[in-house]
Image (cartoon, rainbow, N blue to C red; front, side):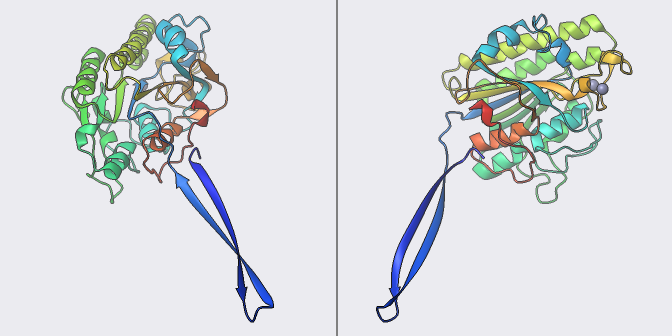
Length: 320
Ligand SMILES: [Zn+2]
Ligand SMILES: [Zn+2]
């Protein structure tokens, strides 16, 4: 959609026959020209499960001072950003990595149906697997590295750190995950990386309101620190785009058990946020038009110049 098309219409007059009859031949040729984006590296930070009402929906941004008051000046905030699929962790992340809403086991025992942006990227560039990374506090998100599409299964898989032991066997703390993400950024400078942080969701499920709010404050600081880490690296600075989003929200107050859980189609579960920063994006812009998590991989595919035909999202043109 954002690709630049140049249309040349060549009209020629060809004479045929014995001089008195002529035939007009129209020739239309379409050339696709790639826009030379400045972005060479993309990081997606997924803060697992805060509600809109405790993040950007609070006009004082009390729990997200860094994102809400500092980082917003650096990028574009989508205020009507949605998970329109299943509002669980694995399904939400799968929508972000495959561009397709799928009902999927939330326990890490089922692979996504469609290939991920990591796989499309690694195939199209023939890059080493250290150029795409999945770094997650939740071990079960290891499934995002692979697909059960038989043409892609076990192929073009990214490097992973999904909890200290991987698979669905364990969860790690966000401090260790963030340290790993920083080490990966500095060591490999991956073209594509997704990071999952779990603290908000964990305290929500624990019915721990203070812990839930503290988790949002911590993740807000991680988001800021991540952006500073990127800016402090001469190679990554001015070449890196950061998407900060969520996999799902949580139930609205008064609906079921409120902030404790999520997973249905209430507004609290569906309404999430996207803050996106990078050298190709506008700064300090707020977009109120509806957009969805499946639009993230479509936008990344456009910027890093690979095709993702099994994704259903649209390029987020308001970013540019
Ligand atoms: Zn959860
Ligand atoms: Zn709900």
